[in-house]
Amino acid sequence: MVEKTKKQKEIIETEKQVGKFSIVGASNTVLDISLFNFGIKFFSWLPWQANVFSTSIAMASSFYFNKKWTFNDNSSADAIKLIKFILFTLFSAYVINTGIVYILTSKLTAPGLWAYSVIRFMGLDSFFGQSFVVNNFAKCWGIAFAMVWNFITYKKWVFIK
Image (cartoon, rainbow, N blue to C red; front, side):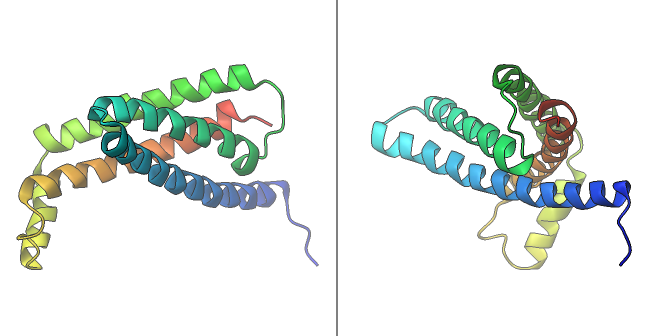
C-alpha cells in the first residue's frame, strides 16, 4: 500500500472540512431564516429586530459547530477565537456579500439581466419578476464569495491547530 504524503493528507482533510463547513453553513442558513420569520410572526418584531436576533443565534451556532466539528478545534482560547470569528464574519457579511450585491444590482447588472432572460425564456417570468431575479442572482454570488472568504479565514486564522 502506498503511504500518503503530508500534502495529500492535508488535501483530504481540507476536502472533509469543506463538506462539513457546507453542512454547517446550510443548517445555519435554515436556522437564521426560520428564527427571522418566527420573530416576526410570533413576537411581532420588526424585520431588523428579528434579523439581529436570528443572525446572532446563527453566528453562535456557526462558531460552535465550525470550531468543534468542522475544524476539530478543542483548544480553550475561545474568547480570542470568537473575536476573530466575529470580525471575519462581519467583514464577509458587510463588505464582501453586501459589496457584491451592491455592484451586481446597481453598477454591473448585465449578468443578472442575463439570468432574467433565461427565466423569461423558460416561461417562468410570471413567477419571478426581473428585480427578484437580479437581486437574488446578486445575493447568491455574494453568499458564494463570502463563503469562500469565511472558509479560508476560519481555517487559516480562527481555528488554527
